[in-house]
Length: 313
Image 1 (spheres, rainbow, N blue to C red):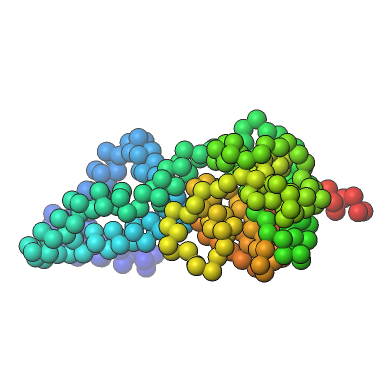
Image 2: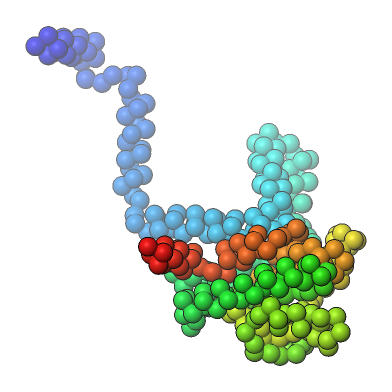
């Protein structure tokens, strides 16, 4: 009751001071709300679709370049754009002119300087697949069959690498993924063999004709041996201490999405090259873990773990 009386008194006082019922300090809020409402009324469903697609495009573009050297280039471009906005707002004519000149020739310079990175990004776009198809599963290959093949192959690879490492026998194994390696397969000796520790040992034994080159695997099968791999794109930036196998592995990973395993014939160190980067010091277990995460879909891994638990009951 008291609250109702207070509200009526407040309304009465406002009516005395503002006979037209308007409150000046609220006019600005009313205007903003009216403008906002008019904008919202003009928005259509296609506008939301447009914004969503633009956001998705920006996000996917960022995902493509964030793991390349172009990542740093994008950061520099954003910084220059921010500086350009500031100097334009401050009307600093000289700096504005210089930045406009940089932007006018910048596109051509980017294409020339970052040609390898741009080519790699375009290759990623070209091999992109719908996620429901499965990241590494080619169309037409049954997921369960592919997972079973890679299960056998990964065991053979890791056992072989451990033995080759112990005997300091050099080896290089290329695992094909989405980008097909037909050119490299054609320059080697074609095979169609199930992988095994004994077969890898025979191939990479120093006195055999197939040891001087790379083994290429596709869908868990050895498809070629004694294959020559492309040289690195920027060989001058690679550590001079690395041998020819490691350089070839880096070059192959730069030119494709392949995983390249290298065993050093000097130290026995097991390394992996991927996306132009070399990671060293793998053991049998760490190598198996990485290959499973890269080559076997998570759904199939979970299914096998569940089946394993059920079988042990």
